[in-house]
Image (cartoon, rainbow, N blue to C red; front, side):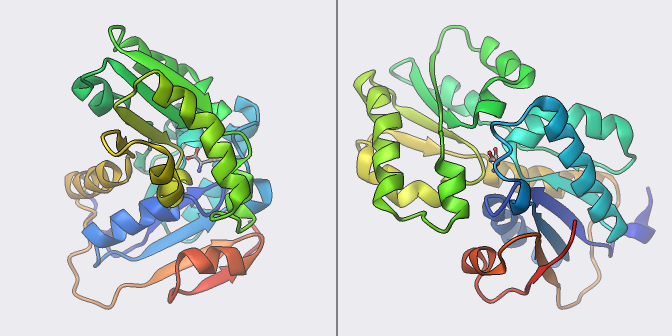
Length: 261
Ligand code: DGL
């Protein structure tokens, strides 16, 4: 156990602002931890990119976070996790926490035997995702790529009619097939909840992986002697390589700065 690192920050990255939904859960559970969040908005969306490109971007983000002294890396992006976590774990010594679509709780609890998943093309075409779905052969899993949603959120258009009409197009066929669970398989999508709830009937449960990732982060920090137990006023830093205004609108009151990474 290496306790000397425990006061160093938790590093998180995403292709953009989406992973702030994960940061929120981590900060709520571990308020004493310092965090550094990277929004790689310049390279968003990751979803349509090749596996090799996603691995290279994930290495770049990890290198930057380690330079800032991160003691653990939270990959707050399903696309980067499902395409690059194996390669990141092989290359670096630091512990990694990944985020994957929460198929298991949906497939275990469905009463209609039909669940929907909305995620990026990169996530749905990954080997890791295919393996997960293969574990639940008895459940019908309706997969839908959320084309253009990430870009619209990155452009600050989360509440637009354009987003609503895309969501209708993606979700109505799932409703027609009688899903009782919708899995949000992209860390940007929890910000679409108000719009999604306007479309889905109230009995359809919507799940994402944010809380589970926060619990997992806590447990890995504990196991590695990395939990920050020093009482202090924690610091939360947010870095973007594009527009600070959009990121700031998702984390009001916290410091956001533009960095070259
Ligand atoms: N927020 C990311 C995810 O969880 C990436 C979305 C994207 O850049 O396409 O998949």
